[in-house]
Length: 222
Image 1 (cartoon, one colour):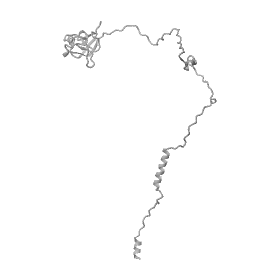
Image 2 (image 1 turned 90 degrees about the vertical axis):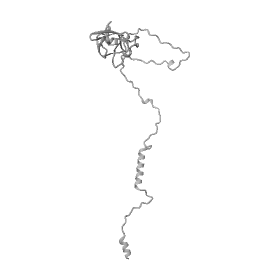
Image 3 (image 1 turned 120 degrees about the vertical axis):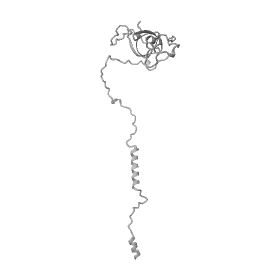
Image 4 (image 1 turned 30 degrees about the vertical axis):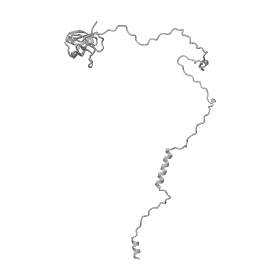
């Protein structure tokens, strides 16, 4: 009796755990499977609503009514001539003859004058006004004794000027401190920056301009 009482006093109530039979699936698994099936049904549509190909059928011409539309025609009315069946159907053979079209007999009309003012008569005048160039230089040094682009021998006394494009022999006048000198183009250059003239050593000595600086020039009047 005492042992039974002690056991009765020591007993505690244990929590009752739910026991799910093996043949019943867990609710979470069932929910995941149902959601996956729903997504698959939306992403892969089935044949619901599709239609079979339309059977080809001829249209009854009596269902249409001929309608004439009047339109404003700009310019003279034209008529399309029917095609020549002998040529349009490819009926040419070795015995066929091609006839050249008749030549035009009417006089061709002249060109219509354009609506623009006509050029005034006159002549082109080459200006001989003096121009100021702020970077005219000279060349020499180790070039003495060499040949120029125009066929001369470059010396300390030769009077001339170098230019990139002017023809050989073109006369150019230079003016500096009251001195005026007419020189021919004897060489090509200069090839430094935007400079357009290179005086020879003899020319720069005659003008007292053996440096790079301003000088007036013009094409020599004839």
